[in-house]
Image (cartoon, rainbow over all chains, first blue to last red; front, side, top):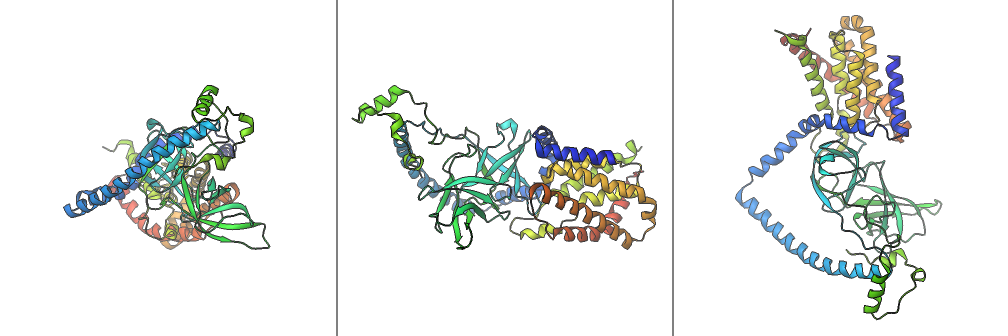
Length: 303
Length: 164
């Protein structure tokens, strides 16, 4: 007994200090796939049943809604392509690498971790689908979480609202940077260490800033719900409503591409490309070191 | 006629315990209902060690705990230690515990589940800085309430499948 306790303690310590045990957890997660699937099967069954039992009218109505949505989105996508090309040209001009389009992978949530104060879910894509640790996960509304544990067919996602989670963000309106930490409650994030003088207002949209290199840039994280400033405290308390539907989404996207480089990162654009660009725009060749690309101003975000 | 003397049935019930551990209610119900989840693995392990102490040993309970660790996203080894502890205590006292009335057994289950949750909560507090929630007591109480039913059902099935 004493031996087992010592071994357990060692394991806990090892897991805490190093990442040596991650593959073991991965194997066990793969081994436990049946448990997860069976525990979730009532809900999976219910959903597929309600899909088969849907009436003709319901399907027609849904189809109509989706078609309308599709039209609106394709309209946005057309604009996006133009803006994107323009943005790439501008970025090339100031000597920054253009952002790579990230590849995404559709996944379905097949299990939740039922402990009250742990916000994690299990999705049905793992190593075999090309997911790697640290991949960002988004849903249709915004940033959902990140992959923290990999099995063969499943992986575990830590939600943005979990107490252990934090994501570098910036305010969409004025590019003020901050860090949005989870609160442990599903409907709330908190900005950490915001000086009382910072320009953040209720209703501001927060997007991922891409700093830290883990999350791709420009995904919505949430909107500011309340800013309370106590003159005696050093920091304002800013609460944020997550954009993603953390407790309702069933289908999510795993961003498996490289985290996109931020504009702070210089520069792999060949010199002649810049010169060509400059010639075309009728500008003289520019001295790159003096151009001083301010990260926020140069970004020209596409929304 | 009875391969492995019913060992497959023990394994099956432990599998069921794992499924029950992660089974969850629909999302639109309030989150605090999750506090009223019995400590299924403790209840099941307690049953088997109480009735068949020679079948479910420390190592098996410990290995089961490792699986629980992964399911509940706890540090690897935490639930393993807890379940091994439950097994050890039960194994040392099983002769006395069998003589107890059902109510007294409920109290023992309450203590074991409560201690298990307390150890978990302390580990979470120390390792991850999560505050201790009142869910510990709720979990222990519900586990004790569940015990008579689980005991009756499992005992019946044990006789049916001749696990010995």
